[in-house]
Image (cartoon, rainbow, N blue to C red; front, side, top):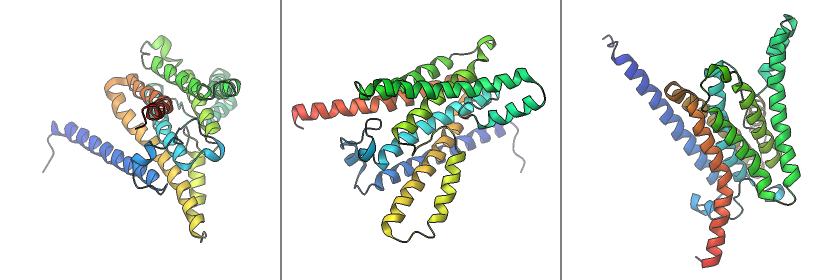
Length: 290
């Protein structure tokens, strides 16, 4: 029985929404798996753990769940940012690997103007990473929390401002701005997690995931397998949430265009405010003893 032409867009829209809901449910379940892998009985136990601060904990105090929560939120943001750049201008805005290939192509073709543009894309990502690390190093001794919150807040503000770009005369600067923001994010997450987490690109993650999946066959002891499975869960979570951010961002872009970046800003502000809110909660609990 042929499908009515008027019903086809509705069916496609319904299928897209169903697909997003399925991905969201799977992501949420994976999020819970990350909590349960800590060996705790409930998520509420983790919320009431003073050592669950995403940015403040480093070194031996930093655990799998710190990296898991940070990775899922920020990879989701990166997915939204990446699809926004692709759909608006056809430019990748979360990594620089592809830009090196385009730079090489333009250079060989003697199209030096376009080659220079790709070099500037790479430079913006580098500058963002430099700025993020510089702020952290400059402020970490006196204001430990602020040293990590400043780069994230800066990123959130930049992305929020770009969400209101519409004039073609200024839209061309979008890739530069977003690449700078992603450089900020990637450097901060790398520093906080001690190079365990990457949230703006997936090539290295898929490489590490392939290696660790092969190691499951050879790891025999329970401790080794548990440690390996946690690492695999973390990488799968990053990939899945990056994909989820791309899918949701793509669907919303068709409706509201670059305003979808407002959602990315909200998640960034949630990430940076989480530690502060949790600390205030413990201060109140200690004061009123509840």
